[in-house]
Image (cartoon, rainbow over all chains, first blue to last red; front, top):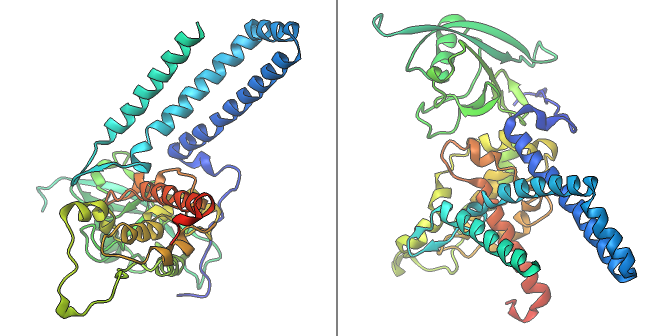
Length: 128
Length: 251
């Protein structure tokens, strides 16, 4: 061991630009901000609902405006990306061992997509 | 030998001599590489024929000893497993493992990892002592399979070189050390989990991990440290709920 090892500084703000895998990670993390923003939209909607019928109608109308639709589309894309990036890593976090063998990762991932589809369909038809 | 195909490769190597340099610098070597060579062969060629002062670690040349970890074109690799034919550009940049202090040239200081690895007690702590005469601790194939992949870790530290959390928070216990703790926690013969939890379930332990997953992507032995860390998080969370919501469940 020498007395003068050289320490390479890592940028606290731009480190993720150094490799595509870090950019993918940041994309996963950043997309949660859109989900965060959408929860505020829902809280706003609840507030309108509690306020008066006119207020809630105005809220629904605002959702249908070009800006409202654009916001929803952007949030949907971000949410789908965010969810898919987490679904893809579920076999690592939740391995299932049956007998000696581990269940294949793609079965665990696809089970999540299946559950997602079922829940989405239920909500869709329930809401119609 | 002349019948084998040779390709002239420019090896751009980060050099650092602590006695004379204030900062690392690149030095380029032109190496006649055979197509089946790995980067380690090219480094050995430099050492033998071009520049005997070049320092780097290596031993087995077969991805078992874990000594020759370095950055090859910015990617954490074992130099003995980085095939020259995979780098068609004719130029390869070789640097010491990222996130570790440079001792000299491609040699990094690994004390931090060794200290962290020792802190998780990466060895079997039997549930109960029994004399040798009482026979072996038996294990079924399923019980072995539960942790076997983690036993393949060769402590090469490439996962630390890939981990941005370790780069940003050097106190982080890191992928390999926590994976090793998980390996023994998963072992049916082991009873040392409580002792390891104090270290691995701490703030500097598993909760510093944000599941970038880079460790598993670069692991040359396909150990999946990222998976191990998430499983430790799940188990530690269950511990917390047991302790706070169901205190009668605690021993």
